[in-house]
Length: 425
Image 1: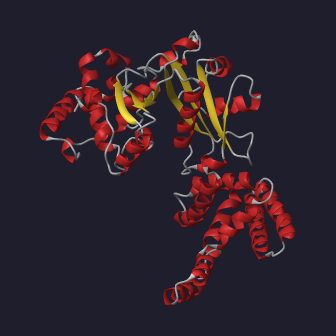
Image 2: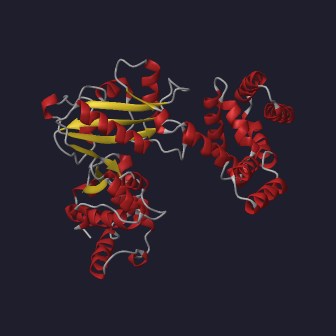
């Protein structure tokens, strides 16, 4: 049976590749569209074991011709101009990019390519040669999913049931415990906004959940409590982004979340002028792992000698506790321990965020132009929060007038930080 399945998969892969080559060679637009639709159908039915063979061939056989690129490059070097540059550009582009464009023109093509990249990413680590295919897909998807093409919609309790089910399924930060939980998150003092693409009108690409409060929160439990009483509209002064979830793994690396937060903030500012403060209540998912793997504070750059000494003392005191104790609820009641953890979290965020090993959530918000505003020990008392961050949560402040300034500073390795956090060092 395994031999038959292997033969069937290989045959299906060959048929897809043969049709792909035929689509690339087709000159007529009408015939090209028909071939693209046929190819989309075959790709949709392609068994999982057949995909590696398809990706292998896309990586090996759909590349530019080196000799032709070299001649075109020499021609452009000898006589720079519009025609020689155009020829070089056309010859240096991988043929698979044109293949992907032709697929995208047919109904269902956009979704097919997004799902195709999802499969490719699942095997990318084991197949580094596929990176060139991924680079082409990411290049095109970044253009096709440009925020200017996306529609932002508010999701509420009257939205289609299938859409609400997708929200429950894709919530990645604070799990939604059934319909009652979702209903509470969609009451008037809570908002949920999502991006949609015209070619995928019923598929949310990414969504953000917002709480409308009187002030900046320091704990997540009251925000997601199922039976919490809705606040009156007169008390709305702060919009809190407390969860953002990507729904489509095939769009990894395509910038969506940063644009969504900014667009939601502008929307709420117009709808509710009394709201003056936009902030987050964010997890710190990399903190516990960083703390556990930290061998010495000497390896951390940017700390002054006195700051390094204070942090080293805090680290020594924290290490008197076992990993199990640090991840247990009793640690939340130890005020001295929480003070040490807050100090070390400040070191982690300010010193590590600009580096490759920095916290991904911090990097997202700070690169997006937010300011590191406040640390909240015990902000997340869930088992997940204790395991990932010893219960620590973070507020990032979005000052809409200074977002670009803060973003530019972050690209230079500088973090916009409130005194309440920088003073912990």
